[in-house]
Image: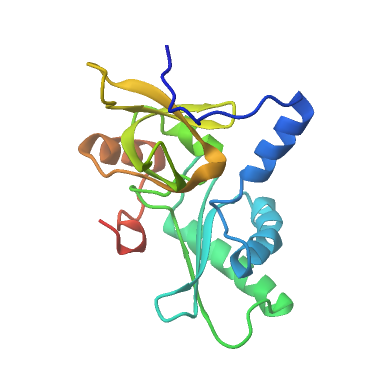
Length: 210
């Protein structure tokens, strides 16, 4: 049995429409509407051509003039040389397209160990590890959740959490379209697994968060 909070779940729709909506959801955590989304749509195909996937783009960080691009290889790996290669490629494209007026700082990095989870595939890849998830709007009065990732199914993030009224942890479904932020929680097991999967990476907490 999978307990769900009262308003969780997707409405019944035909398969084609549901598939289309889920496809549109794939980028809402990768890049917010506006400058970041425009840049994502611009650089994602070019990054894919040299075998990189964009994990997240943020613009306006720190001094308001920083463009942060997180990326990795399709297998989840990313090393310093890869960041440098992608940075050169992106810089050349942005110089031509000039999507940001004035001067700005470009930062290209790996997602880090306590990485943001921005795509459905991230919740599949990191199943069994601890994550924090925040919703844009509360469900049954609750916006923040922490628990073990149990995958992704039917447009929902599956999370094993402690629920009042249950003696054991239960798996709930959180609609992906309502997720405003999700990231892995730094643990010893996550560090070991990340190093095993990805080799040398930057383990600095993303955005300076603890």
